Image (cartoon, rainbow, N blue to C red; front, side, top):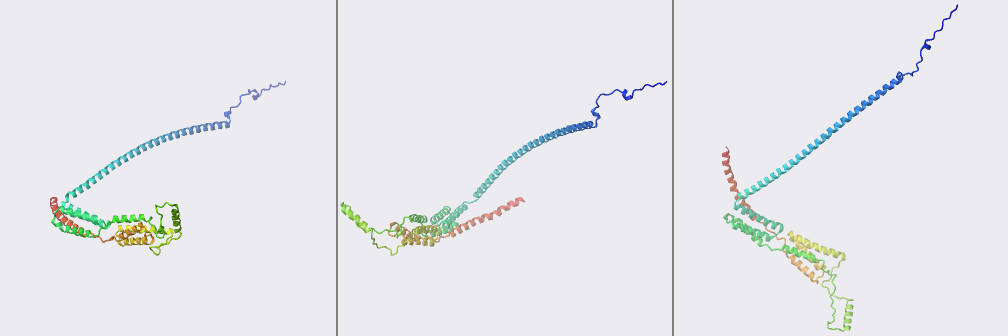
Length: 364
C-alpha cells in the first residue's frame, strides 16, 4: 500500500507578511544628511558665539578708547590751564623785571644827579646851549637863534662866578661878536616873498598880448546930443581899424599858446628853486635863479603892467639878498667847554683809586 506523506508548508509561506515600511534612518543618505545638518547647526552656533564675543570685545575696546579720549582731553585741558598759569606768572615776572629795571635806571639817574656838582651841571647846560647854537647855524642858518643860545650860555656862566671860567666867557663873547657882525637875513620873509611871486605868475600879462592904448577922445559927459554920441561911437569904431603905437621894446617875444604854459611853469620852477637854494644857503644858485626870473619877466611879459613892474622890482631886490654867507662854526666855544669839563673830571678820577685802597685792605 502506498502511502503518501502529506506535504508540509514552506517556511516562507508559513511566515507572516510584515506590512510596516522600512525606517529612513536605515538609509545612508539620510544619515549623511542628518550629520550635515548637525554640523551646519553646530557651525552656526559657533559663528554666532564668536560674533557675540567680537561684539563684546569691540564694545569693550570702544569703551576703553572713549575713556582714554576723555582722559586725554582732561589732561590737555589741565596742560592748557597750566600753560596759561605759567604765561600769567611769566607776564607778572616780566612786569616785575621791567619795574625793577626802571627803578634801577631811576636810581642810577638819581645817583648821577646827586653825584654831579653844581659846576658840572652849569658846564653841561652851557655845552648844550653851545651845541644847539652850532646846530642852528649849520643846519638852519638861523643866526638869531644861535646868538640867543650863546647869550643864554653866557648868562648862565655869569650866575655862578668862577675865575677859571673866564677863557670860556671870552670865547663866547668872540663868537657872539662874529654873529652880530653877520648880515641879517630874514629867510622866512624872503621865502614868503618868493611864494607870493609864484602865486602871481598866472595873472601876469605877456608882452605880445598887450592891447594898444586907446587915445580916442571921449565925448564930454555934459553933452547929451545924440548926434555927438553917434559921432563918438562911429569915430571909436573907425579908429580901431588901424592902430599905430610906439612899443617900448623893438621886438616883443612871440610865443605859441602851448609855449605860454611852459613859460609860466618854468618861471615858477625857477622861483621855487631859488627858495630851495635860500633854505640850503646856496647863494650862487639863489642869485642866478632870481636873475633869470627877472630877465624872463622883462623879455616876455608886459612891462607897462603894474603887477609885472612890481614883480620885477621885487626880484631885483631879492637878488641883492646876502644868501650863502659863511657862518662861524663856534668851535672855540665848544673846545673851551670841553677843556673845562675834562679838567673837572680829572680830580674825581684821581680820587677814586684813593677811595678804593681802604676797601681792598679791609677785604684782606
